[in-house]
Length: 88
Image (cartoon, rainbow, N blue to C red; front, side, top):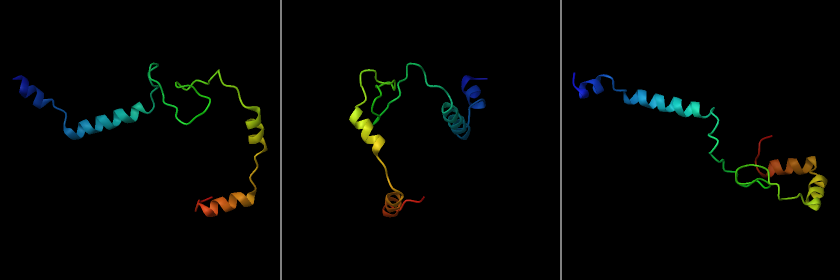
């Protein structure tokens, strides 16, 4: 049997290739990323590029106090939901 005939006989169909690729992508969702792979963390303060907590920054006491004092009434929440057409 020639090499071409062997390849043709044991070739994986296009549909089967797509199924294998989809299964491979699905499985990759549940695998731990390699140790050398960095995860991008965008828009999060207090984290370094690799996602580790920053050790250089100290919390601003005034900002912490402001956040602790922040309160939103039930009426304000209802108005926000109504204004934005949000579902509860």
